[in-house]
Length: 299
Image 1 (tube, rainbow, N blue to C red):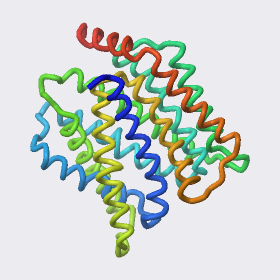
Image 2: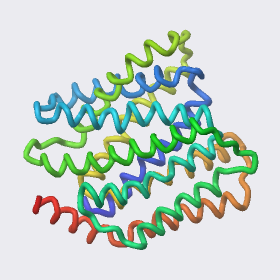
Image 3: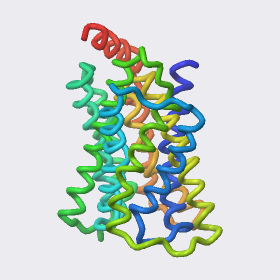
Image 4: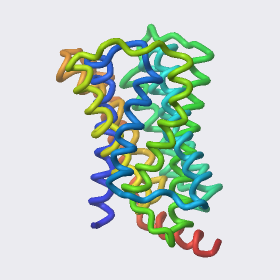
């Protein structure tokens, strides 16, 4: 599979994540974020684990626990805190700093170069998300802002460390399916105690609730993270991370198309800037990947 095709299929992950906002608000019971996160991660993780039939070796245990926490447990928890305490536009704009963080973390952990066009692309994407989602009535909550930044930092570390450890442990032959299964199970297990302690039991689920959970688990978690981690295994984090800008853009356009929400001229401008930033971030993915691979071989 060519790098371009891998990039396109990886982009499907944030596009599907964008639909999660609609499914969560329209089809799931409200007020149970941790419990729903566990139900989103753990069942599909166990299903994928049964399919791949491969448990992590001893040298992977700590790494999988760290990645499960960064990519799922901590990220989803802080994401919910940010979403509850901030208007959606503010929360998404704060989270949009992740690609910029990935640039500097990839430099530190992978030795990948930081190009000027990458900085411009990341900042442009943040600006585009702000135009797409922020309103004049948007309020700022300190705890919500800290949670949003913390979630972006968690996912950025998870993205870069996933690439680093996959590259360093190629001899273990860990497939993207197996890698996804391990992290979903670890993330779900780490979230389970918090969900049990901090939240009441779920009410009786309707058929719509069940369909929503199945979609978020099988498609919104299992399929998307399989595509995401496969992309990370093949391409540079600097090329993959900006694709996350597609998530808020998808959420806004689904709200317009499905729920009949209105879109302003500024929002269309913001969407255009987002697509420009993603295009700009892909300017030299092959050369960036070559530099990373050479660095890892030297290490």
